[in-house]
Every structure is written in C-alpha cells, then in structure tokens.
Amino acid sequence: MNPSHLQSSNNRERTMTDCMKLTCKAETFLFNGNFTTSHGTRTEAHVVTATLRSGDTTGRGECVPSDRYGETVDNVMAAIEKLACLVERFPDREHLQKLLPLGAARNAINCALWNLEAKRSGRLCFQQAGLGWSEPVTAFTISLDEPVVMAMEAAREATRPLLKVKLGGDGDEARLQAVRKAAPSAKLIPLPAGSDEALAHFAQTIQICAHESIRDGRELAELKDRYDAVNVKLDKAGGLTEALETVLQARSFGFGIMVGSTVGTLLAMAPALLLANHADYVDLDGPLLLDQDREVPLVYEGSTMRPPDGALWG
Image (cartoon, rainbow, N blue to C red; front, side, top):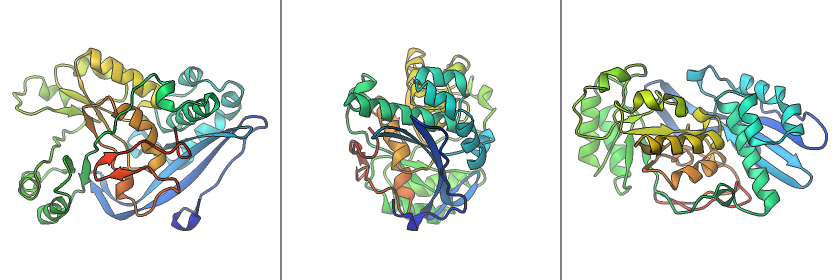
C-alpha cells in the first residue's frame, strides 16, 4: 500500500509466532472533509487491520475501535496480541467466540479467519457462509451541521435513493425540514441510548431502528415492543460470525434489518456486504467519505455496491 495517505504516528506491525502468523497494524485514513455527529467532529478514521498468514495465503480483517465501548487503537491491538498464540494454534472462528468478548478486536480476527478460510477452500466468503449474492444499495450520510449546509449537501446527493441524516438535538427539526426540501428522501430517527422504554407506548407512523441499544442477539427480546428494526454492525457484534447469528435471531423476532458500519475502509465494508444482501436497509458508505482508501477497489456505482475483488476480501 502506498503509505502517503496514512497520517499515523503509531503505524506498526507486530509478528507473534512462527508457522501461522497473526499481525496487527494501526492505520489512519483522512476524511474528505469534516465528519460531524452528535459525538463530535472527526477529520480522520483510525482503524486496526489484523492479518493471518499461512504459507502463501493471507486473510485480512479491519476494525474501528469505538470510544463508546472503551476501545482505543492501543488496547485493541493489545487484545489481538494477547490472543495471537492461541489463534495461531487454533485458527477456528467458533473457538474465537469463546476467547474474546464482543468488540473491535474480535471483529478484525474473525473477518481475517473468514477471509483465510475462503482463500484456502478456493471459494468466496458468501459461498462459505451459504449466502446468496445481490448488489445492495447503500444509504449516503449527511453529516451534522447547520440546516443550510446540510441542505446543500443533500441537494448534491439528491439522486441517491436513500440519505441518512445525522442529527444532534437542538435544531433537528429545522435540519430535517431543510434536507427534506433539498432531497427526495432522508430517514433517521435518533434516540438517546438508554431511553428505549419510552418507545413501548409511542404511537409511531414511521419505522424506528435500534442502534446503540443493540450489540448482539441478547438484547433482542427486550427491544421487540419498542423498535421495528435493528442496526447490526460487525464492530459491535464482534465479527461476521456473531453478526450473521444476530441477523437470524432478529428475523425470528420479526425485526427488520439495517446493516451499518463505523466509518472505515473498503476492507471493513467487504465482509459487511455478506449481511447487506439480506438486509432491509444498508448503510455502508464509509469509503465514500474518505479522501483515499485501500489500493484494491470496492466499486460503488452511485449508491449500488458491486462485489469485492478477491484481492481485497472475499
């Protein structure tokens, strides 16, 4: 990879053992402008990439540490390092579920295992998972700002079939009105985490999707009378294995499915695409918000996502 777009002081790769090798690397990718949510403004995305090498075969997975869950680049890398010997001796996805809790570190290793297994078998990951393939349409994110600025951004992206609007409290009604006027569709209803009980008796006319209130399938039962859909993310669930199980459980409860991601590179979006093909809503526009990305492309034609190149992930 050309390192010119990486702006990280702690880009480093750590090799753990012989035979199968597990390495992790911290990287930083610049946004193509300020990215603002209710949690603040960012100008760059900090990611951790896990790589498993076995002979000439390599599997990779990317995660984005989350402040909300107490994750940092350093402690995610430390968690990967700590388990390196066990993962190298027992490179099994189900075994990994017992070694690490939900979160970014497990996601990176889990996706690397999926990738490595697929390459070894000569099959694509969606075939490994027994899933079909289509070409999902992703939402495009309108960053939080003043109403007039958000309206201008929405107008530029008005041909996209689905816009996701970042809101932040005071002034949200004006923001939504401005975006609605500037573009044909914009759907996002935020609710503070921990306030879910207020929805149990809420007379709604639109679908409401749980985001921060769910990480995996364990929360589904208590949310079923409060939400219509759930937002499944690989980083929250701790990998593709757990996320697939969460989707199955959510469907059994009658939830709609939204597949989302923290803003990361194409390497983070590729495994999420396996979920996207079975979701009602897709929010995998992270690479469209970055100034530069990885060297192997994941193709977006407008908002339609094409299958990933096997050299990237798959």
